[in-house]
Length: 549
Image (tube, rainbow, N blue to C red; front, side, top):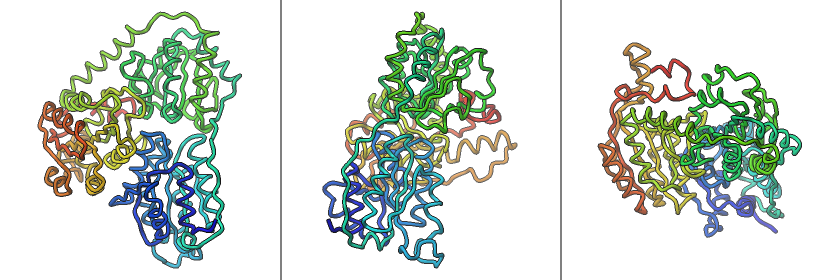
């Protein structure tokens, strides 16, 4: 049928199941925006106050729903502003679709200085994308969108960028819209899986290391079945938390690496690149320990440790096959409940000694339903929560992965709440990171996004200042902050706000926010980071000089 390139774009996104877009309009997107207006009953368009937030919101939407998160921005500065969010989605293997404008098609890469031009936009964003593509006619748009959906839904999920010049969005063409496609999983080799089942079944003390790929593929039921069958602890990476409920005694955080790896005679790493930190790399691995690595991305198999058996395939398919195959090789094992429960108890006792972080984190956990979602951030309570915050269901814990993207949390949490309207989301922030996207209080209010946002205020980039004071001989620079009155600021946007000065007050405030249906900001004054016990000695990830702070 005849339609503009903008209509072809929107209709193609609709066919691929896109029902929510986070974006900002601009002159190069006029005909895409007009097409979105025509489909306003089918596609929600949530406009933000900064392009950075569009990508973060799309990421939060994607990681907590398992669906494609979509953002729409103008070319040049719009793409570059969104790049921080795209890089976080790339690090965390999140299926985010970045739809970008372009300059006039005959001006692309001409270096003429037209509005929003940057040289090689596709190449610029490709370093944090799995796939990039441009359509130069309306007729090319539908298949471009379809290929993007295939890349997002097959193999390893990572961001994809597609772009259309403004004249192509305006031009009318004879467009054929493709039918939606059911994409199949990448199945692992069954002979290799049989060998893996044999190695695991014969092991006396098997260990499973479960990463974000288990959550991406929806394989948490199979993970639990295999762990029960093997009586194996499941050490979840930071991006894999929630693969097994923390109420299960077999569930262990990544920070248990020092105890679990040396004690295992067989290790199954699945859905993870198996980077457990520089301290883990220095550990001695027992002689004869069998290492099996399964990942949908062939480039990740063996990246950080050479496996005895490397298998390429989807985590859900692989785990389902292992559940079927292990019983014919499986040995009898004594329960490890007492051992693993003691390990967890010892860790919890150390965490409880950090009374301030412990008190505030548990005030939130006590009021957040089991299926409630925590969006963590780079702040003292957030660092503690990486190890200590119990997670009970899959896709209910989000962090910024190896990017450590300060300030990503608030906007990401808004996207998570939009994607999960019947679940409650809590966003943990420090005062430094929160200001990165503080303008999205406007988006929060405009769309009545009922997120509970907690801002811990210590008047500094707290961890940076701690490092400067301890390692640099009391010479802090660039780490002190001047903050607004958070309650007044939120209220000026039309967001309800309150102040909590202790865990009981925070617990009551979160309880009210979770029970309500409107946005809420909670300010929590905090002691300086140096006056708090450091959580880093319990973390396996930072290098040793930071561990000693």
